[in-house]
Image (cartoon, rainbow, N blue to C red; front, side, top):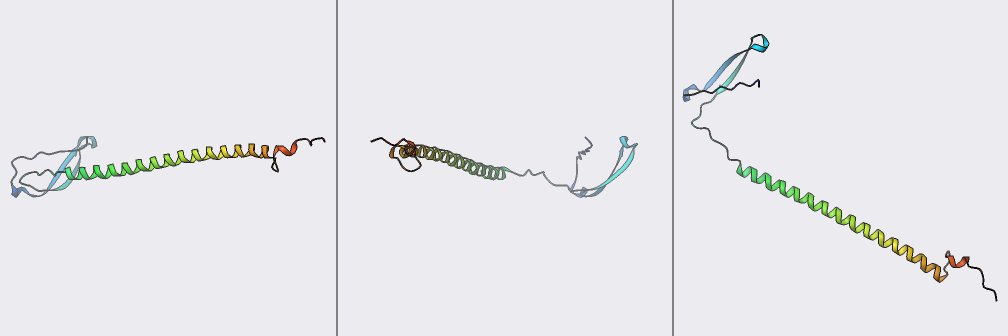
Amino acid sequence: MNNISILLRNLEFSDTGKYTCHVKNPKENYLQHQATIFLQVVDKLEEVDNTVTLIILAVVGGVIGFLIFILLVKKFIAFIIKKTQEKKKECLVSSSGNDNTENGLPGSKAEEKAPKKV
C-alpha cells in the first residue's frame, strides 16, 4: 500500500542514469509529486549468499544461550546448597539446647529445678 513498483524490460547499459518520476495521487485531488531516482543497469542480478552469516549468528546465539543456561544452573545449585546449610544449622541449634538441659549448664532449664532435700 502506498508503494509503487515499476518493472522495466529490454534495458541496455546505456539506459543507466538519472530519471525524474512524476506521480499524481487521486487521494490528494491529483496533487503532483516528483522524485529523482538513479537507475543502474547491471548484467545479472547477483544474490548474496547469507549462509556464512546465518551460521555465525546461530553459533553466537547458541553460545550466549548456553552461558545463560550455565549461570542459571549455578544459581540454582547455590540456592540448594544455601538451603541445605540453613537446615543443618537449625538442627545444630536445637540439639545444643537439649545438651544444655541435660548437662545443667548456665542458662539451661536445669537451674530451674528445685533443690534436693537432704
